Image (cartoon, rainbow, N blue to C red):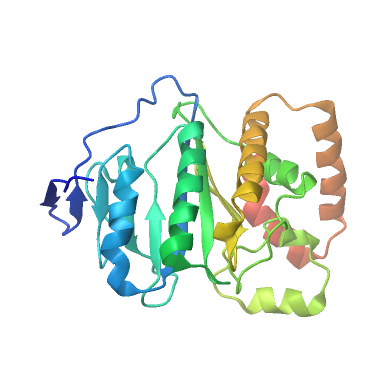
Length: 269
C-alpha cells in the first residue's frame, strides 16, 4: 500500500486520509461497532494502523490519549485508548455504516485482532443500531429487551467483571448473593442501553477470545437487527401476551426490584 497522506487535527488526532465516505442515503437503519482489545506488542501499533487502512472506506483517526473529537469523527474509523481497560487497552470504532459494511468490518477487524492483539474477560464488542430517521421515533426499549430476552440473546455471553449485566435481571435475578453484589455496585453497566430516541447500544458480546467467534457474533447481530426492526412495528398478539406475563412477574416482585424496574422501563410501559 502506498503511504497515505496524513494531517494532525486540532484535538491532536492523526488523520489518515482515505477520501471516501459510504453512501447511506438509501438505508433505513444505521450501524456502528466498537472492538475492545489489548495489543500483543505496543511496538506493532503502526502495523495495526496499516492493516486498518487496507480495509477502510473512510478516513482513519488515531489518537493516543483521548477520544477523537473532530467534527466528522462518527464518519471515520477510530483507533484510540479505551478508558474502561488497563493502560494499554485499545478500541477500534467503525464509521457509521450500512448493515453489509458492518458485517465486513466485523470479519476484518476480528482477524486483525487475532494477528496483533488478544481479548480477555475485560474486553467486549459493542453494537449500535439506529434508524436513519431521527425525528418522530420513540424506540420502545422495554419491548426490545423483552424480545431479546425471549430470543435468549441477553445471556449468550457471560457478564464480564461486573460490566454488561443482563438488563432483564433488574427483576429476574433470584440469587441473594448476586442481588447483594448488584446492590453494592455503584455504577451498573447493563448489556442493553437506549442511547437516544432512535438508537440502541448492545454490549452483550465479549469476553476472552470473543474475536475468534466471528460466526456466532454475526448470527447474533442479525437477530438483534431483526428484533430492532420488529420493535418498531405494531405489537403482535404474541408480544402483548409476553408483556402481560412479564408484568405479572414484576407485580409479584419485592418492592426494591419493582422500583429498579420502574427506573429503567417506566416510560415504555
